[in-house]
Image (tube, rainbow, N blue to C red; front, side):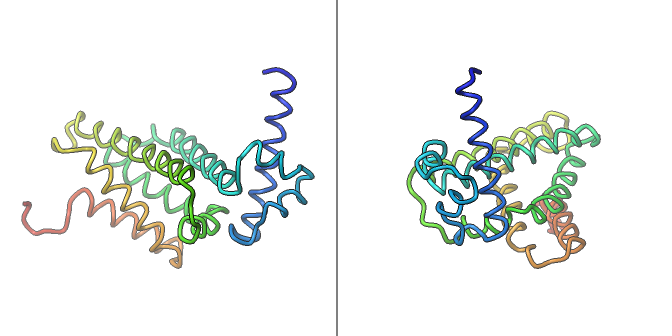
Length: 199
């Protein structure tokens, strides 16, 4: 990386860090590009050069959150002996990290209220596709290890992602203890169901 590229990356990081603090403090909607300009000393043009829009900047922060989550998961993953244990471990990490993440409230605002451009919709679709691929790989490992029966992992990955997304929304007002209990129950139901006889 040459000096110009390094400076560009440093500027991008400085803008992202300042924007993150503003989104955490004020929320997504109440934070304007002008606020970010004031906080960073960067011009509006410079911010748009790096991120194209406020939405693009927020998506960049969500990408960083995803990477942080994956790094934390990789550090813990080897602690679990089975894919079943990994699913319960993921549920715990989701409850502990996602519900307490500083950007959670701003992310809720962004996803629920924001009118999105096609480009933003595409970026969100890419993000979700990454989650589905992660889920599918884990479920496939469970089939290959003999823990899970042979089934369509693509469909199950969608169901699992829906469980995570739904729990994320429904657990917002719960205590951490209650959220952990719900996430644990969700994985139990996902794995074993609730019917008396299997279908």
